Length: 375
Image 1 (cartoon, rainbow, N blue to C red):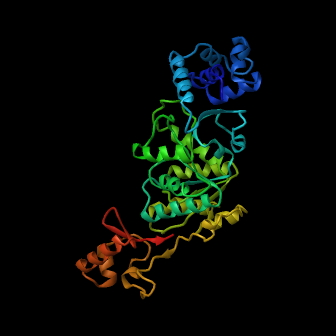
Image 2: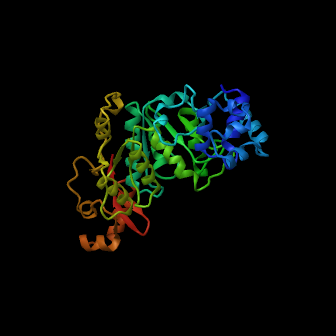
Image 3: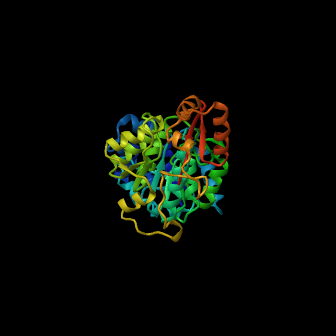
């Protein structure tokens, strides 16, 4: 465990306004460690960093003593789950992050630290995912986790949340990298999920305790998701999605990028289709990813491939259903469905409600309906 004096040195380096990660890396390269920086005369800092940065670092922030005390107390309460700070050069620091152009210098961790050394795969996607997208994300995550891969995501609404939930069902478990301090949960709806991940998986953040959810932090967080993982799976994403930032960062880091295709009419599929056009690998089942990675460790629970385009029949003996055929897999409104089938809106509403209750279709915003392909 880190000593208090070393923690204080790291916090001063990282939390002093005006001192960025690049300057800290330069100081560490010259002086070798965080405590050694402050053991050296201030005039020697100017050999590594610009004078204004050295001037900013020469005076500790007013709130630094309170931050040191709070962080140290948080670390001491680490019986279960484990709490730690993992700094650059720490034996627990993931080798994958060392290959990044801008690796984190210190991360706060809570949970199973052994997951940092486990091969992992990121799963990301829309916060406003369709029912089909949520089902796909959860099924892919469970299959990858059952194959021994840790699933990395960002604890956001939508795809991230169900990816964590699916991964917790397998032996690979899950890692959540968040954009706030570890003593905060955002969004608040995920408090129970965050607690479960802390107990059974691993929570990570490079932001100090007490840090609120600031917009600029989430794109920065995405680089850690992409950098920690062997590859990134994008389940659903619009063309302006933050998930595409993660995918771009993964490509820039030389990692694999996979995308699940969808309807050409769905805005939530256009980001995935754009990635496929740019060279991302189209995947229809989790096995596609495992084969691309030459990953052969599979448990019996994951021996059956997971597909995304296998519709659920009402019963094994049921003939093809005219309404399901009319629905297809694209979102459709009631009027258009009435025109396709010739049925009255009242008849359609009754049948659609029955299918919805049985999980065969999903009701979407705007009075649209979509057939659900079971994974």
